[in-house]
Image (cartoon, rainbow over the protein chains, first blue to last red):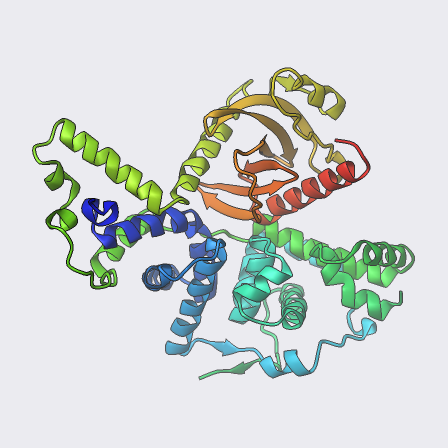
Length: 196
Length: 269
């Protein structure tokens, strides 16, 4: 009896067709994440190519059923490799997140909803402020607010404990808010140090 | 609950990650505390602004074509195979020989082989069906056969028209008014389509009882400018589609599922 699989198509062709069928519905989300993490179209395209090749190579061993999260994990890892290679990765103070959970004194945070609202009226300001954040903060906001992933899904996707996810989200929102209130002026952030 | 605790839980509350008791306690505190309420307002403002206005960058038009080409050019080599019979490495048109009926047969066998090996390829067709159904419905007067924001009008309309009773929920108080219902045709069967609105976006919810009863987690897709969600709940398959952004669409789905669970839990349907 002829082996259907090998008789009618080269193995590679079947793998690719199957891979594409499962992954291409997630290309838009993958590209958007890569574009926000790398900051430009050319790098985002390079990332997608690299990430898809890697994903194809690993596809035979993929037996999960959440293709989107799996693909986005590969995409974001590829982004960080690119950022580090090009010395553009600004590190957040990771150790703080794990050992010193965010302790905020409510009186420190003087909420100014009216001012914030005024700044938010301009969609341009929002995008500009988001672009100013370190990559990990941008990433977590994209995953939570643009893609709508739950804390658990984010935790798996970026391979980080839930507690860290929650504190990172809190700090990302806080920093975004500060950028917006500062109206685009540069801000001193002691917690940010430049990686190599 | 004091301000310190409230502060810690504000994010979880916004993100729908707080349990029912936590929500009640927090909302009680917010009613009485101006400063926490202001922070809560800011948090929601920020998050909502991100969902509505942050750019969703679209890939360049040739990205997919470039990827296809790159994958084929650079694909990792297939594992070495054992020697097999002579026909084993022939491509379909070679095996079929002279074309005509032979080629058609070979082509359909290739297609069948792909189905065998890529069961999830069926998902792509479903996505396209759902998109087509959605786009069709957006044409003038095609959205609803029964146009009403009253679920007590819409739900009974399906009696006698469908072999199952679709859940029709009222989510107006959450910002998703019901527009009505209609019959639609997806996956080679008649399905219920229930339409909602959120701001200027139309959301279509397609529901039917699936052939196989396997459970399935929530899956999300973005295609051709539309966001799609698919899940199963209480023996029904749901496909939700809209041009609304993914985060708010997921929020809608969460509300719909919660409403479904609440109604079923209280003995209704």
